Amino acid sequence: MRLMTRLLLAAALVTLVNIAVLPALAQEGYKLRRVFKVNDIRRYKMVMDMNGEMQMGENTMPLNMQMVMTYREKVAGIKEGKATVHTSFESMKLYMNGQEFAPPVPTNLSDMVITTVVDDRNKVHEIKGLEKMAMGAPGIGNMNFGTGFNSPAMFPEGEVRVGDSWETEVPIPNASDLKITAKQTFVSVEKVGGVDAARIRTEVEIPYEKLMAAMAGQTPAGMPPISGTMKMVAFTYYDLATGNILKMDGDLVMTVQMQGGANPQMPQNMQMNMSAKITLTQVKDEKPAGK
Image (cartoon, rainbow, N blue to C red):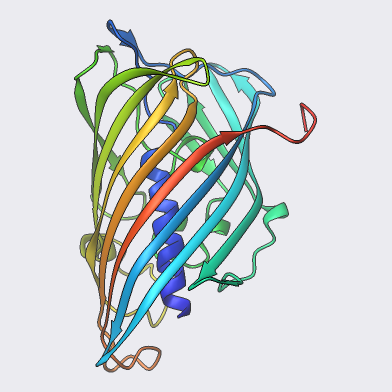
C-alpha cells in the first residue's frame, strides 16, 4: 500500500509536470512569453480523482483515491531577465475509498518551499526543494518540473496561431538520455472570468519501463521492476496577457506492472489500472500581499 501510494503521488506530480504553466497564445500570431512582476502571487487548487483496481496474485482490490492540494506561487525577484518563483503548499489531503489517510511519509507542508529560476520563455535554469515533495518516488526528486514545479515546456521562438501544434522534449536529469515528448495544440481563444484566455490541448505519454531503466542505480533499495505507461490529455486555459494558468481539466490513464516474487517487500506480482480526472483552478489569495 505504501508503494502504491507513492506511485499515485508521483503520478500527481508528473501530471503537474505536463499540464501547468505551458504557452499562452492568441488569435492572430502571438509570441508566447511569461510576464513576471515582483511579489506577484497566484493561488491554485488541484483536485485529482482516481478510480481503478489493483490485482495482486489472485486477489483484486478496487481503488478510489482523491488528492486535494492547495498551493501558492510568488515571484520573489527578477534578475537579468530571470524570475525566482517560490511555491509553497497550504494543504494536501488524501482519500482512499472515501476515507482520509496520511501520506506514507509524514511531510510538514508549511516547511516546504520549491524555488525555481525561470526566464520569460519558461526555460528553467535552476530548481530546488522538489525532492521534499517526492516522498521517495523514483526519479521524481530529480525531475525538472519547471516554473512553480509545474512545467517542463519552453515557449516557441516564433508566433503561433489557432490550430498550430508543437512538441517539447522534456529532459530528465540523472536519467541518461531519456526524454519525454509533450505535444501541445492551440485549440481556441475563449473568455475565462472576463479574461482573454488560450485553450491548449496537451498530450503526453510516460513509459515507466524506460524511466526506471534510465534511473537504474538511483531508485530506493528493494524497489521491484516496474513497467507500464501513463497517458494524459489535458485542456488548459492561459491568460493571454501574462501566460499564467487560469484553469485546467484533464484525463489520465495509468497502467503499472510491478514484479514481486523474490522481493520480500512485495512477494507477488502486482498490476494497477487507474484512470483519473484532474482539475486545477486559480483561486482567491487569502493572505496579505507580499506574504
